[in-house]
Each structure stands twice: as C-alpha cells, then as structure tokens.
Image 1 (cartoon, rainbow, N blue to C red):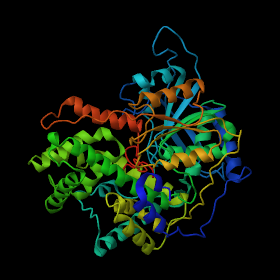
Image 2 (tube, rainbow, N blue to C red; image 1 turned 120 degrees about the vertical axis):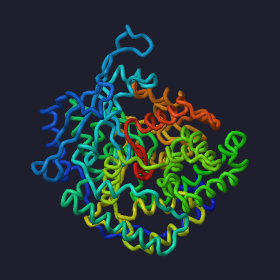
Image 3 (cartoon, one colour; image 1 turned 45 degrees about the vertical axis):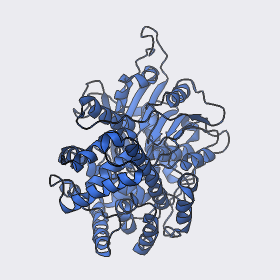
Image 4 (cartoon, rainbow, N blue to C red; image 1 turned 180 degrees about the horizontal axis):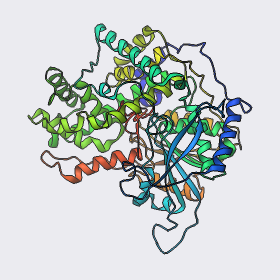
Length: 570
C-alpha cells in the first residue's frame, strides 16, 4: 500500500490486509470530451465570459481591511442541463499592484488572475487575496490579481446544511480510542441521521455537489475573469479537483501549483485514502511527542515520546470523568491535538496547555480546545460540504462490518486518528443519492503545460506518496519536496527554499530539472509556562491563517482549511 514508504513495515502489512473494498456496482458518471457535462461547461463558460464579474464592496466579515472587492459568477447546478437551475458562487479579488517587491518605483507587467483554493472540501478562499500584503506574497501580488472564492455549497455560494448548527457542536463529548459495541451503535445511528438530514435539507440538489462539478466551476470562473488560460494554486483537496481540471481541460491551463497533493488514484478515493491518512497521522503524532520530550525541561510532560503519551492519556482520562470548564472532554482534546498534526506551529501552545492542565490550570486548554458557538454555523456548513462531496464522489462500503473490521485492525497500530476518521466519514455508508465513479486522472505527454507539485515528506493529511502518484499521472509535472517536515500546505510558508521554487514557477514559468528537495524549515521554539505572550498567541493564529490561506481543511479542514470538523481532505 501507499503508506509503506513512510510508515514502516507494520503499517504497510496492516493496510495490505485491509481488503474491504468499496461497494461496487454504483452508477458511474463518466466525463468524456463529448459528454453532456462537458458541453454544458462550454455553454456556461461562454455565458460567464460575456457577463464577466461585477466587483464591488464585500460583506463586512470578508473585508475587514477594506481592500477586497467581491462579486459573483453564475454556474449551472447540473452541467448536463446548463439551462436549468443556476447557482451563484461568491468571488473576491485584489488587483495586481504592478510593483516590484524590492523596488516600489519599478513597475512589473500584469500576468492575469491567480486563483487559489485551500482545500476541504468545504473551505473558502474569500480572504486569500489579502495575503498580497505579506512579504512572502508581494512579488506574486505585484504581477497577479489575487482571486479567492467560495466553492459551491460553501458560505454564501448556494450553501449546504445537514443539521441544525446548534446541534452540530456537541461539547463536552467522548472519543474512545477503542470504542465499545454500544458506542459504535450510537455513532452508526448518528451517521444515518446525518445522511438523512443532508437529503432532507438539500433535496435533489445534493447529488450535484461533487469534485467534478468543482472542476467545472473552476473553468467557468476562469472564463468570467476574462482569462483564456488558468493560473491556479490548490492546496490539499484543492489539488484533487485541480488534477481533475488538468485532466478535463488541459488546453485551458497556463500554470498550476499542487500544494500537499491528494493521491488521485481512483481506487483510493475516498475510503482507502482515509485509511492511509490515519496511519500518517500516527506518525505525525509521534513527531509531536518527540518534540515535546526534547523540551521536557520546559513542559515537564516526559523525557520520552512514551512518557508524553502517558501525560496526554492522563489528561484524557481526567477529562472523561470531569470535562474542563464543562466544555472540554476527550473529543475536544483530541480535536485540538489533531491540529498539531497539520501545523507544527501549534506545538508550543498545545504542549503548554497540556502542561498547565496537569499543574492545575485548565484555562489554556479550555481556550484552545473549547467549542466556539459563534463559529457553529460556518463549521456545520463546512462539514456538510465535506460530507456531500466525498460521499458523492465515489463508492463507499455500505456494510458496517467492513468499516468495523478494517478500522479495528488499523487502530491497533494507529489509534490516534483512526476512529475519529471513521465517525467523520461514516454517513457515506448510508448516503441517499447515487455515487460517482472517480475520474482516472492522467494527461498525455505534451497535452498539459508543465506543472509544480509541492509536498512535505511527513505530511499527515495528504501522505507524501500521493505527490509521487500525482507526478506520475500528470505528464511534465515536477515535484519539490520539503524533506523531513510535516506541515500541511507549504507554499508561501516559512521555508524560503520552497517559496523560491514557487515564485520562479508562478512568475516566470521556471521549474527545476527533475525533482528537487529543500531542507526542512526550523522547528518551533518552545513556549515556557507563564510566557503566554501576545507574540506566542499571534504566532499560532498567523500559522493557521497563512497555512489555510483564508479557509480551510478536513478534508480541512481535512481541517482549518482543512480538525475534522473544519477538515482538510484526506
């Protein structure tokens, strides 16, 4: 299996033994060049090109600095019927500054629109264009209009909902590492009810929230922006429908960046990719504990990864008996530390919260892991889109015994994330609308311009071998690896080597000859107890916002962008 290279013999043998294949015989929705959906996309793109996008003031929550401009683009709900029901996608833009980042008096030519998607499914990039003010993005912002958007179903773009947001955030709650049979039955009932709620709240529209339609929407957005060819950067799940776009519309591609690539192998979408992801998070969870143990003099959580795990499990047991502040139980604890699997910038504050709790101060943990009622509606919407897209995209096992067998085995070697992944995706076992057959992503030599793939070697949300698979399938693509690092989403981040390759490609189309590697970015510095400074808190917040680029994760994000409730894709 694909986890073998990174995750060792035990994980590889186990995944190979998980033979529960997704249910077959589901209706396939192929997308050959002459299909009704492709013809419908051409019709919609023609209309969008003629109409353009009327940019004006944004909603206050999208435009805190007052520099964004927003508009909408109209797309068909069903591309097979382009004259049927239409939906509007919200779009944001900051126009190219035309300035050189090092010499403000020097003008640079505009190169068009640079469209970004942060992943999910269920994440928005409406605030992404604001990154142009950051030093790492100024050169790109000088040459490109930075464009973000809310994909179909997200935020104000024909929003999806599967349940009352007030019921979505349940806290405190349990999250047993090895669930009992009675607990499993409770979660099965919840998954069935959630799937029914998606159908009841969305009706016949539910089946049209898919990755293929996200790719088609992207082509209509390209046309509405007046761009004959697309310049696009997708992160996490954004790499998957970006790869679908490259397969369906290779002649419409100018430049494409795939940051933290989803493995596009149709056999993995999406059930098996979640199994791989659970193994990858176990490795990243060990990386975090190793770092904490290295700084035992600061946190006092243990001098070995095993000791740190004991401290974590001690907190988990105490929260199960008495939730912190009546808000934080084991599930909230696990969600907070899952974020640390995405971004190592979280490591100092998460370790500090654990240390403080064991010393009698629960406030840092409550602040970091407690539910945010004001975000309930947005998180419920994001989760609904994530579920609809992944359930619609591909066949899933419909027999609970398959899920139970595969994940019971997997949890023996990867307990940290396995069952959380199950509960996140289990509605797909009881999904009430037809599933698609995933498109076989691949391009012929010369059909697609050279593209850039960025990947961190120890990424948990999108395991590294997926980047190799994407490179194999997209002819002419080049892979740049951040070695011995695991941050999810590395473009525009702290690694200057990675950013150099990104800028060279986006600004002048230059790629390295063959694959290239970058040394890892520096590990985070520990934060001492009592030093919960504004700078430390700012570091965590900026890490999240920069990494998700206005989102995520998920799939995310399969968590801020893309935790599993704001999930980055697998």
